[in-house]
Each structure stands twice: as structure tokens, then as C-alpha cells.
View 1 (cartoon, helix red, strand yellow):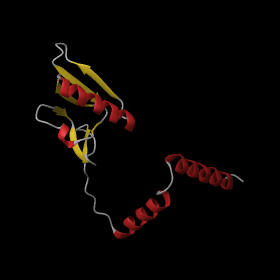
View 2 (spheres, rainbow, N blue to C red):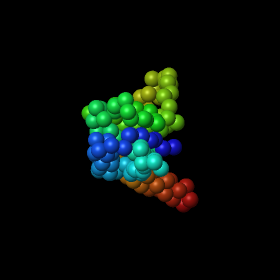
View 3 (spheres, rainbow, N blue to C red):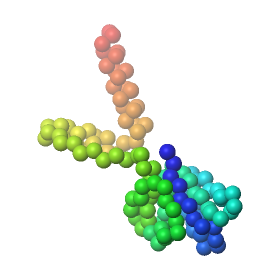
View 4 (cartoon, one colour):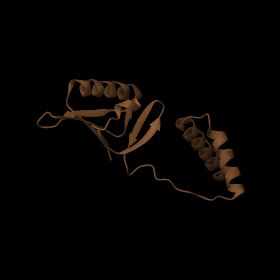
Amino acid sequence: MKVKITLENNACNQEKGRLIRDVNRELGYPLHISFSEDLVLIEIEGEHIYLPDREMLSPDISVEGQLKERGKGYEIFPKDKGKTVNLHLDSELVAELEQIKQHFHHKTQHDVLLELFKKGIDQYKTENK
């Protein structure tokens, strides 16, 4: 699911569109920018969009997605993503989850998978001797 913002096509909003494009490009968020058939609207679409300044969100901007404050601006996410779930966990499980979190806190996904793979191979070797 994608998010979309629509702006009126004028010089001020064209500058806003360029700024949004450049900031999102730096953050690694690819965007698709297009114009309506009659060239009246600027349409910016992506998996999620970061607006670097809160003042960019004016009444003439149409937003399709869910806004979340981030730094000095807003991040727009698809409405379907990011459901909130409330869980009530017992203290033993919470303690175990904290241990796991601390163990993997400073590791990349690659490091974690490599460690699990090595442990799996070692266990396989000990079972099949």
C-alpha cells in the first residue's frame, strides 16, 4: 500500500515538492512524482513520505495515509500498516524478552542470522555424530 500527497500546481508548491523529493531521496525513500492530466495538481506517491517541516502541511495539501510526528516534520505511513496491539505478559516472559533484546541490541540482522545458522550447524553436527 502506498501513501500519496496532492498539492496545487503553483511555483511555491513546486519548490515544496522538490524539497520533499530531495529529503526523501537522502533518506532512501523512493518517490514517484506526477502531475494530473490537466496539470493543476502535483501528486507525490511512495511507500512512505517524510515531510521535513511541519509548516509544509497546509490546508491545501491532501494527504492519503497516516501522519506521525518525526523530528521537525511528519512521516506519512499507509493506513493499513502499524496496528497497535496491547499485550499483558507475565514477568518471566518480560524478563526473557529483555534478555533477548539486550543480546541482539548491537547486532545487525546479518549478524543475528549468521549466529543462528552457526548454532544450527553445530547442533546438527553433534546430533549426527
